[in-house]
Length: 225
Image 1 (cartoon, helix red, strand yellow):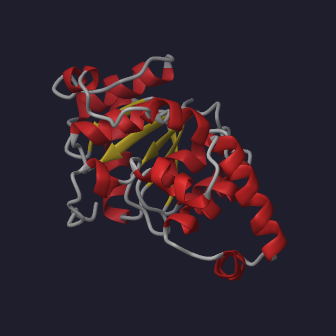
Image 2: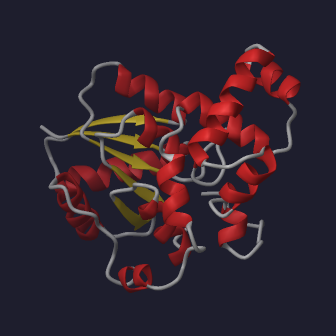
């Protein structure tokens, strides 16, 4: 029995995806979560999740933060992105950040079945119409290196980095996360060390390329999926 976790905040899409999964894996045990925190709780519940199907647009996260948080927390569980944001540059960056596959939300049942089978067997899956783009210069120079360094951050450090990117001061970060300023300073020091940068500003600049707005050429008017 294959245990699959669907992480998407739209109940109707979760139901549609559940139906598509059952088409390919009739005996699959399917779990659902509407947020990254709910997903982490489900996995920690000892459910034996074997693969995660993750939407990139979730409440409380931006860009690839949800993917990176789950990858850092559960590195042995493959994550396949199922998203309406199928720009080749996003697909490329998702794979570089450790996603084991990427399929558009409009994918047909047979392609989803193939994707699940390949990812579960240890391969990386991208639809044929998107695969050729992965060989091109669709990510900024050095993104592979920064992605590797980013993967070393703990979930707590990733949350602090997210707030740094929003321009928050240590006091504000401490308030938002419910920790002390001393703890925030320690996290910032570790972030700078792991990213191999010398300042908060450099950390923000180095990771800015991983944001949707940058990848899509500054167009912030993306559809909510």
